[in-house]
Image (cartoon, one colour):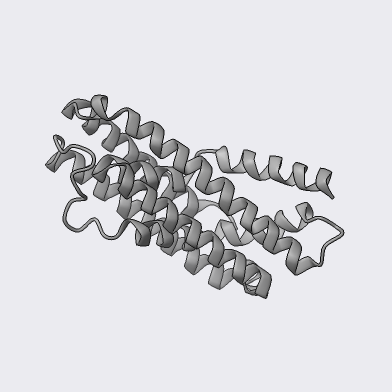
Length: 206
């Protein structure tokens, strides 16, 4: 069982380290309002994973993954939300390029926790991941529901550790980020990346 769990942690860790929409959303919040704001975003993402995990254990995530129309709706909503965040980041880089991290999010940025939660909940790929890959990693000696719950918790912990560490690394770069040109360039890059992820989500087959 321990060997099986170690293998599962390795796979989940690799998947967590791959840059994706969650990392881009956290980067945006870090650039807008600093590490504390970004960490709250990470908490929102973790909450979204826990929600997906609960839906998976209850069997609802599998139903979504198997329903083309419902999957399409969630996919398009998620893609639209990522594009919206990207556009906001681009506009922010033009209007307030000299803002310093940690001075508070601009008006209209919304709750960081809610931003993380919504961006994760509107990612239907999590449903596919939890119903497709996760069961193959489940320890065979545990009841299915307990095994899935354990793997979801492991994934949440790995996500919090990875994104939290990434946020703290960004915080160490504050002296560099205080330069308007650097902040503007990073904000524009983050905006383009978010829009790109949104387009990828919208156009990728389920």
